[in-house]
Length: 355
Ligand SMILES: [Zn+2]
Image (cartoon, rainbow, N blue to C red; front, side):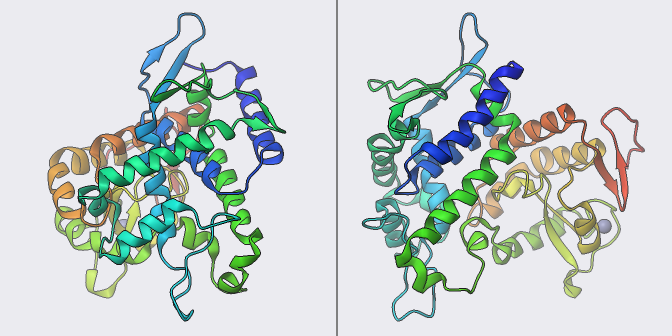
């Protein structure tokens, strides 16, 4: 169900106002916006409820938001500076450190190394409960307070339920403008951390804060290489010519590009020549590649990928499939060209040679 052009414009205008007129002393509101956008694309095509006269709405439980918060803050719970006398986390709050970060850092110190390990940890449900509390105590009701006044454009404030319900058309807008929302959120989130003078000593001039906060972990991508090499029988996913693993020119590629959906999902990886990967860049691959990706990662090796990669990455085949559908849906709406091979593009409608 589409949103009217007017709602889409209002959505963009409202977003801009959030960043200008909202009051940000902690980073929780950024996390909430990011979480809402993520959940909307992860549930692409699914709508929990349909209101009688004004299109589709989406119901999102506090539990879902709480789990998203944990995922978003997980990467931030690594000490930013290894050279400081004691490992220090970036402060994400003007007052005391954001509580969720202290908790996550504590679990890291106990040897938990990834979100998927975290989900199997015996403290997981306690952590989710605490995170749910954080969401409910603050950001859920503060996000839509503009210049001190509640303006519930995204969802009504329902205090007596354990979910929120996005207003009609809002989930459509989050899906359509996902890149825009996430880019805005991440820029402002980063600026907020920089603005906190107590972080100066950690950040200094060095390092790339954006990469630290939101980058894909290149080192952990290596973990996926051997499995993908086996699955693809030693060939590049795209050109299907042999890869030379030992020469290190094989790269793990995010099938739905990282810039479109900046989260590492195990089923979204393929192995490709560096040359093919660099040439594909931020483009979506053609429909014939998509077809082979579906067969390889979501049918034939679905279980194997979950078994082998879940210690390192989130491996949720259904979620990955939703992201994939969403990305192609948006690209089609936008008349994007799809990448077929080195410097070769095809449109959605063109028949392409089946590889
Ligand atoms: Zn290749």
